[in-house]
Amino acid sequence: MMADKDSPKKPIVNNSNNKNKKKKKRGGAKRRMTHEQTVAYKSVSEWVFLENQSNSSSNSVSFDDGFLDDFGVQWYQPKEKLVFEFHSHTTCSDGFLSPTKLVERAHRNGVKVLALTDHDTMSGIPEAMEAAHRFGIKIIPGVEISTIFYSRGDSGPEEPVHILAYYSSCGPTKYAVLEKFLEAIRNGRFLRAKNIVSKLQKLKLPVKWENVAKIAGKGVAPGRLHIARAMLEAGHVENLKQAFARYLYDGGPAYSTGSEPVAEETVKLIRETGGVAVLAHPWALKNPAAIVRRLKDAGLHGMEAYRSDGKLSVYSDLADAHDLLKLGGSDYHGRGGQHESDVGSTSLPVLVVHEFLKVARPIWCNAIREIMENYMKDPSDSNLQHIVKFGKFKLSKSISPSGSASKLINRCLLLWLSEEEREDAEFETIKSELTKVLEAGAESK
Ligand SMILES: [Zn+2]
Ligand SMILES: [Zn+2]
Image (cartoon, rainbow, N blue to C red; front, side, top):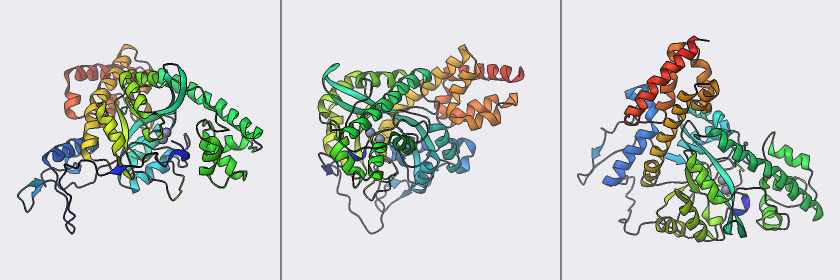
C-alpha cells in the first residue's frame, strides 16, 4: 500500500492467545515448541527446503537432531529460522529496489521464502526467481491487485481494496487471462496518474508528467507514490507523507480513481487461475467488516492480520469470525525511511504459515497439473513457456539436449511439490506423457 496508510487506524497490538502460557525469557534458553508447533515446523521446513532435499540428502534439514530438554520434552532445534515475507514491492511497481536487489536484501535479512507482490504486475518475477536461485531462497510468484469495492454491489460509495494473489512456481493457470486483466488496470493507472497531475495543476501545484513517468521508470504504470515523489522534487511538499495527507489520499483534492475491477470479481479470478486470494492491509479500510464478509462470500482465502509491529487482534478476530487464513508481511517498498518496516521483519508464527500452506499447496498442485495438461493438449513452445515462464534461465540451458527435457520438468516440480505430491498417479502419467512430447519436440528441432 501507499505511504499514507502506514499508520493504522486501530493500532491495537496484542500478544495473541492469552491462553498461551506465559513466555518466560530465561537467560538464553530457547522456547520449547509444543507438539503442534513441532509438527508445523517440520511440515513447513520440508516444503521450504524441497529443492535441497532432492539435490542431496546431506543438505536437507535434519529432524533427527531434536533433543530432550530439562523437562524431558523433545524439541527440535531448527538449523535455520524460517522467515517468510508475504508482501513486498520492487521497481516493477512503486518499490525502490530492483527485484535482484530486493532478493539480496531479503536474503541478508534471513528470508527463506519471499512473495513478490508488485502492484498489478508480475513482471518482476523472472528476475527475482533468478536471483533467488543464486541465494537458495524460494520465490512465491504473487501480485497485489488494485480493486474497487462498491458498498452496494456495483454502485454506492466506493473504496479501493488491494487483494494479494499467491501462485505456484508455474504461475497462474490462465496466464493470458490474468495478464489481460492486470494490463487493463495498469492502463487505467496511466490515465488516473494523468488525471491526478491535471488536478494538481488546477491546485497550482504543477508537476511535469515527464518527471512522473521518469520516476516510475520505463514501462511502469505510475502510482500515487511516484506522483508524491514528483511533488517532493518540485518542492510542493516537505515529504511524501505530506503529499498523501494533504492531496493524494483517497477522496483527497487531487485524488482520482483508475479503472480498477470490482473486488469480488478479482477474488473469483484469482481462484479461477490457481491462486490464493488474501485481502491486503485491512487496517487501511474504512469499512473492513462489510468488505471481508462480501469477499469471503466471493471465495477469499485469507486476510492480513500481521505486520512488522505484531498481530492486530481486531483483524485477527475478524479473520477468525469468517474462517479466513491469517497472513501478513512488511509491505516493503525500499523507501528507506526510518519508519519503514524492513523486508522480512514480520514475524509469522510457524502455525500461521503452516495453515497457509495447508490451503495453498493443494491449490498450487492442481494449478501445476492443469498447466501441464494444457501443454499436453497443445504442446506448443508458448505453452511450454507457461510451465517454465518464471525460470527462463533454466529453459535456455537445458532444453536443447533431448534427454534433459524430463530433467527440466523435474526441476520445476522439485522446487514446489513434495515427493508425495509428485508421486500422485495422475501426475506421474502427465509427467511421462509430457516427457515424451518434450523429447519428440527437441529431436525434431
Ligand atoms: Zn503492498
Ligand atoms: Zn496495498
